[in-house]
Image (cartoon, rainbow, N blue to C red; front, side, top):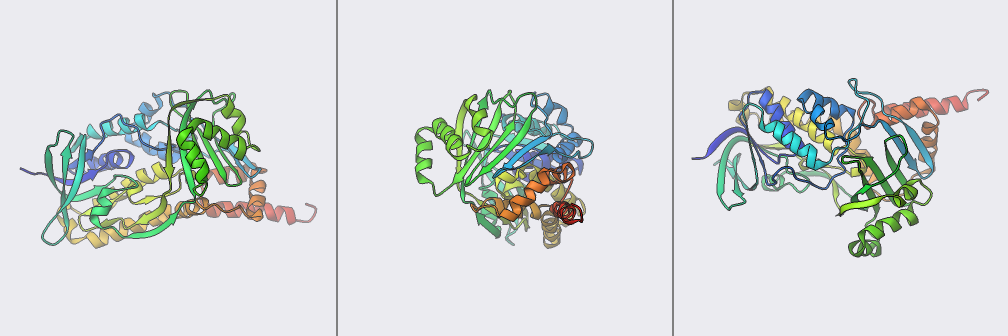
Length: 417
């Protein structure tokens, strides 16, 4: 007998687990599936800002996340070609910190929390293999296979793909790809011990020429580092295949010598496997169709340098749940187009501005001198710095930064300035 649910979620990490929690609050029968067994790691720089921490507090998981010992921080040091912006993030909902919990901890915490919610059935270790469709072509369920080879079938009024950047649900559903901007960068992620920032804890973001580096304080007293350089540098990619640690140290010394990053890295010890992401698209997809929907990276993936992936997953889960809440499950089959329009318009209104910034950052082009001059103005003004950093946690919008630059330029041009 095929088990039946209101919603089946394929993918039980940040996006899927959050959606399961949201749907439980609506009283919907929800099935949450993932091929992994938790705890389980995945490639990520896994940072979240205060706005997402506020949501985690609402969900009741913030205390458990903090209990991992991962340090809260609220300072950023950004060095774009010598234009330095250093300051504090503004508070959101009374929270002024950021948190970079390792995925093996945060994904497990959210999965267990979702599994404990009323109306949620959570199964790990099962790989979805296909969508099931009715006679009219609408999606009506999903099939999967366990690690032991058992084939299972589940019926659902809606199947949600929360299965990441290379979403199988998206492919099976035939979701339209509406935008795609390929990155110019190769990306590498590593954990290190002994990365010394002194007394404070803060995020660092460096850009020098065509090289970039990011450092976040994370769990287990470690830092997670991101390294980026042009995909066209085949020689460096080949060296990193053979000597990953030595290759990244050389990248820091040769490509980021004008920043503080190489000095800090010299005293650090690499821990665990260095992982690579060699090419990806910043993409935006159709978010919903007849019997299916997408959230998280399955819906839209953007350059990791903008640091919005986990926020977007959590926001999208909430928006999809709110969209569904205005209709009874029995009425969904007659309202797919209307619900899709509402969901996709909401995603675009909230997320498109950061998606566009990610598309700009993903291109290997020099920063215009006018932009670097604006960054220097921002970095010299505490209010403008806070506004700039507030763009990351949605305390401010990109237009607010433009207004701050306008204020600073006007002050420079004023008589007697």
